[in-house]
Length: 206
Image (cartoon, rainbow, N blue to C red; front, side, top):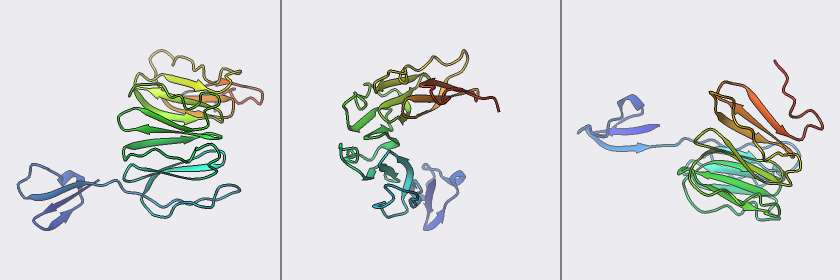
């Protein structure tokens, strides 16, 4: 959202924003935010105050949020450092696992923190990523080519072994459970892999 000042007159219409207009004496881009509300049993206490949050994520016993400034905050259990957020003001996505956390920077690089007993925060190098997810003990990311990369966990159920997207499609969103993973393709179909002991990877037609 733009806020543009024209000779003392404030315009909040993005269509009117023109940094080359000689009448504009100030131009700023604002990221609007909201307060956080928590409910249920568990880590609902200690939620940070303010109305400048643009994203939230829940781990097993901890919470994460991104402020409109792009910085991170965390609360709840910190038994393995999963709330020891990295510094910076360039974060655009977050995810929480059982005792680990992931964050995605605006340059496409990944940061992991918390428990690393199974390599779940050994993030792949590079700045080629657009989305992230945490299972309890494994981690997932989508790269710019629309493929899912997985790491960490026991991988006994192949929850990290993402399939190739169907021909002509790409993955656009990803999510993870304890021992299974889900991916949404650009054609609107869902792919699932990993443990199916409760039917969690059996996709039913709606």
